Each structure stands twice: as structure tokens, then as C-alpha cells.
Image (cartoon, rainbow, N blue to C red):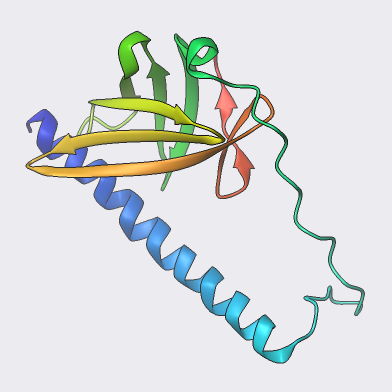
Length: 143
């Protein structure tokens, strides 16, 4: 399997898992707004408001040579952010293997892009303080 095919499979996994989840969140949010009530816990008390993002402390300069671990649909990936905006993701999947990409910081966003089989896929992650967030949850920093 070529690197392009591996990359396409990796992003297909993200799309098949992430898109339905985001659709469910959007439907739930729309339903809550339509009712006009705050989302409540089982005991009827309002849930705590979402955590505010902290000002980003991570920059392109201090992200170089850092490594982060993602877990997508049971597939672990160690993503290393290299100098010159290059990224490498090593997965625990023999089918996917290693994926090459690029990255950049835009304010509080970490933007990661990879191209495979003529298709370019981009993920926008949030930077909050010294954390990188995916769907509001911090990604584990390995180094």
C-alpha cells in the first residue's frame, strides 16, 4: 500500500468517525436552542458552561520537535511536528504506517494538512494555553 493510500485511509477513518459525531452535536445544539432552555443534568440543575479557551502559549517556534499522541477509532498515532512546517505521523496500524504532512499555527489554531491520492485534507485543532485540543479534549504530549 502506497503512502498516499495510507494517508487517504487515515483521513477516511477521521471522516467516518468525526463527521457523524459532529452532526449529532449540531443537532443536539439546535434542539436545545429551539427549546430555549439550558441543558440540564439528570437532577434538573443546569450544566456548567463550557470551559473557556486559555490564551495560546504554543507557537510555531516552541512546537518544533514536539510529539503528540492521538487515538482515532482505536488507531494510535504519534504525530511529530518538525522544523519547516513538516509533520510525520507514525501509526500502530500496519495498513496505514507513516504519514507525511505539514503544519502551521494561526493564532489559536494548529492547522495540519496532508495530501494523498490527489486529495488534500486539513484538520484545524485548537491551542489553549500549552495544550492542543481535539473536540475540546487535550491531546497527550509525549515530548
